[in-house]
Length: 382
Length: 115
View 1 (cartoon, helix red, strand yellow):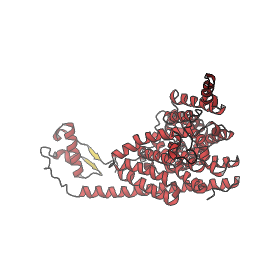
View 2 (tube, each protein chain N blue to C red; view 1 turned 90 degrees about the horizontal axis):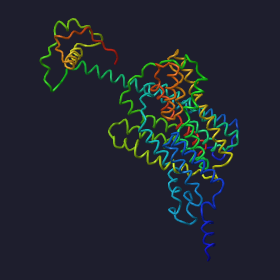
View 3 (cartoon, rainbow over the protein chains, first blue to last red; view 1 turned 90 degrees about the vertical axis):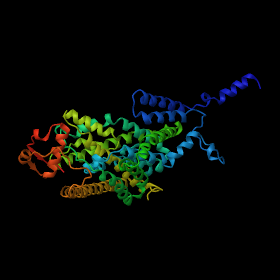
View 4 (cartoon, chains in turn green, red; view 1 turned 120 degrees about the vertical axis):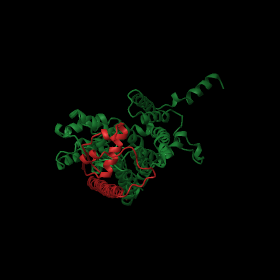
């Protein structure tokens, strides 16, 4: 063995030698996403681990997402592959839903139950994107996974895609979270196009106070009602309502605090990292990915339209007591979509304060998208 | 249910309609339930407050002394949807919090604004 052979051996086993052009592109994509997360602060809590996961998964020869060797033990798999089992088994999205439940105040929804209808109407984009995806040649489970992007709910999108089309998980998760971060850009033009200044200026009356008993009974009944109709929705709604009961019961403050802080943060790290790690160049850089990104935007837009149209109907029925802008908050994306309603409402009438009114449809959207996911899982799940 | 089947555009449209209907009906049922729940709780709390106001006040503390309800004041106060016992308590609280003796306070009216 001479010195040149040793150098040659080192070169041939180096990452630079085995780097494919697709891995190179994905590494650049990860840098762009890291820039957006750190400098532009686009959903940094998720985008940062996702983009770092993309970087780790595309490092040539690192094998962090490698499955265990044939006949080998499970622990011989790559580090990220092991963590990814939490996504594949739906464990992480469901735990995140528990944290969301512990952080959610359903008070505005209880004070104005009609909000639930706005949350339902804002799921329109899911089904529009599903239908278009089928027309474009995606298989029904793939189309269902793409459609759920319109629910604007990251954990729900990951939950459904992980079950129905795991090979599309990365583009679906990235599209869902990217569009959620871009809600202040996507929604306002649609809101202004579909409503008049008079409608946007409507000031809504103050919400009634909600009793503690209502807040405690609500999660239990939602769970029972939803699961009796759609058993497939039990993991998502079950964990969401458990977290909410922790919060509202007032007797398990430590559990509530853990669910909405430490636990959700830990799981967010694992979820983001491994969702990003599924975006290996070989799988991600396909024409299908562009299709998914375009369909995701369509889904978001139509969900906004659905909520706004029902908001307009309520405006007409109530004789101008409902501001239609709160309808667009029915796309989950809590609390970003509600904030957009508030901002647009104030632009039309500086004395307007819509935030609490928009929070009702906003949290109803979380339940609505979970129900929609349950329906699609019932139809296309194995 | 349809995991292995391929579906046409028309089938996708039908499924979308059914899916949207399920979401709307489910959430409409929840809305109905919330209305019912708030109605029952409201009714229950009304009954509870009525019972509490008609029942004699049982307190381990001795009745407040030194803050007698000024006769002149009590006669002139207009009570709207408020009973005398509640009005007396409100006057005593206002006096206590403001530090002004009751005989130097003048109440025009005490009105119950909402339940």
